[in-house]
Length: 443
Ligand SMILES: *Cc1c(COP(=O)(O)O)cnc(C)c1O
Image (cartoon, rainbow, N blue to C red; front, side):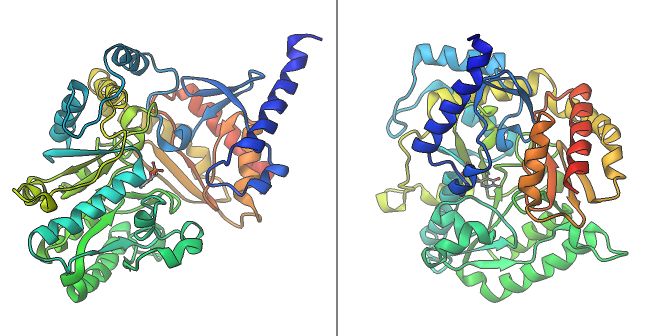
């Protein structure tokens, strides 16, 4: 038997072992009785390869983390180099060059002076929520310990993060464990009635926030938002005026503003951080996902000097006594520094603007497709809904897209592209052609 003939068996053996030993995330495992897992052997650029050599264009950036492709030489070299120096040291009582340099660079980029580290997005949300409530406690206002979040928001799936997350499928089973907070109208531009603009929707939604803050500000520590795009809501995009007015209301009512830029940070929306488009500065910003270019788990919460200062005292109890074992891991920080160096060296933000304009021209047939609704683009994200989608559309489309060599994972009836920034015009053509074919077979 040749090696090629053996390969499918090797694949099948891996799939069986995976199902026997691994509990996969965000999955009803029984569905894998009919929907096969995809064994990935290696990645290179925008492509993922299975053991047979079949390749898939990673059009969701391995779930929103990969910025510059797989097997990225600079990031790989930075991690390898760091590995020769120091793989890890606890950050309590110790420090090291990569974490200092990264904190300095993130402070320069965000205008927020101190960085606290976690390991993934949800840990950043937990840190931000705890920090906000503790801030008010330190200022003598312990009643301010609840939060405001937007309808359809997603901030992670740990119990604290679920208390500001409004995706029923993630939250329902755990609702007895989750604290009640205040949900306010989403500014999602898809809600626009005929004749209404995205700005009209945002201004209508802000009234709801104003009402809740007016009534409950004495018990509210912070508003948490995904700036410009609510990702898990189906790439719901909204007008930056919402963020401007939210900032003003937070100031008026003494409520902190937490910007969850875990998904939208690092250039995704066309600026380094989405808040820049509203010309606002949050009190706390949560960063993760793309921060290491998709190489290693890392999260950072940066805070204003006012927040930092409120914890700075002689009493231990006023300190932020929070930590994770891998807080500030040097390898992850080295990957993040390499990622930031690519942004500078390759002028990525300007480059992406040119690319997005070109991709918009390439994707024009989708915008005009008879089943496509709410075609939209912001930075390096494209999204649309399918009208009269069949039952199980997301699974069906995912399967059909795989046959076209595309990794696409719709959210309900929403199809989105969130590709690595290195995607070329040729790749975009491939993505368009495969998407059109998969759509033709699904609906
Ligand atoms: C992914 C995401 C999170 C959670 O990050 P994890 O690393 O998956 O825990 C939080 N907020 C937003 C906006 C996200 O997209």
